[in-house]
Amino acid sequence: MDYWAYYYDWWGSSSWASVTDMPELGFYLSSNPSVVRQHIQWAKQCGIVGFITTFWEGILNSLDVLTTIAEEENFKLGIITEFLDMTLAERDRQLGVFFARYGNRTPYKSWGGKTPIVFWASWQFTGPEWDSILAKYRSRAVLLCCENSWDTGTGYIAKMAYFDGNAPYTATMVERYPERFQAMSQECRNLGKIFFCPMGPGQTTPTTVVPREYGEFYKRNNATTRGLNPTAIGIISWNEFYEDTHIEPSANYGHLYLDLTASFTAKGTYFFNHWEDTGLSDNPRQINT
Image 1 (cartoon, rainbow, N blue to C red):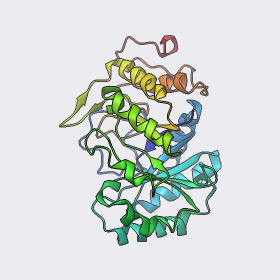
Image 2: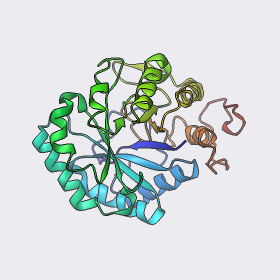
Image 3: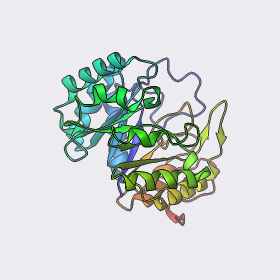
């Protein structure tokens, strides 16, 4: 089963003011090639096959860097569109920008020769409304709506006639409401569609606190997610420090979450001397997953 990770490529010099943890690489710029290369190399070492990276027209410089280094590192990429509250016409225009600039780049031919695209905020339009633009990209993309079942019900089912599958976005809800995601997984299988299942290590926001429990929540979440038999897994996240869902090595957590990820994927070669004392009692090389 392939593991991907959601990647945020909009970090700038003024982005880090309100975060509560610091990357091991420091408060970096997403356009820094050395940082991006280290991210990709770490991800490959722990068995992550690719990043689903944020996309909108305002971050093309960072995406240029990510794309070039992914090519050099033979690493897969897809995108999650940050098109909240945009009109369909504007979403269509920005997708056109993406394909004109990156559509022929090798990292994006990552899912059966096509680009996986997660359409964040797909709930803002009906299936027939979406179809007016999706038809343009079917030959080049794996089109995934991004709809949750715990807050929007089963509306995603009707969209399966227009999308190739569903990729709900949540770092913690699978472990908290497994029966709802089991139903979603089964529904996608019954329809012959992709279920790209999310999972993460915990979360801390002003409205949601799900403690990490020194990696224990991540382990339970992984076990629950795998038990749903999804098509693939999307880790939330590589580097969303605002919501404290990151697995990237950091001051608070060291390399614990990359070592755990390597144990989940069974493809990683990450178990080196990467553990650093962060005040946690866990030794990641002895964790029973």
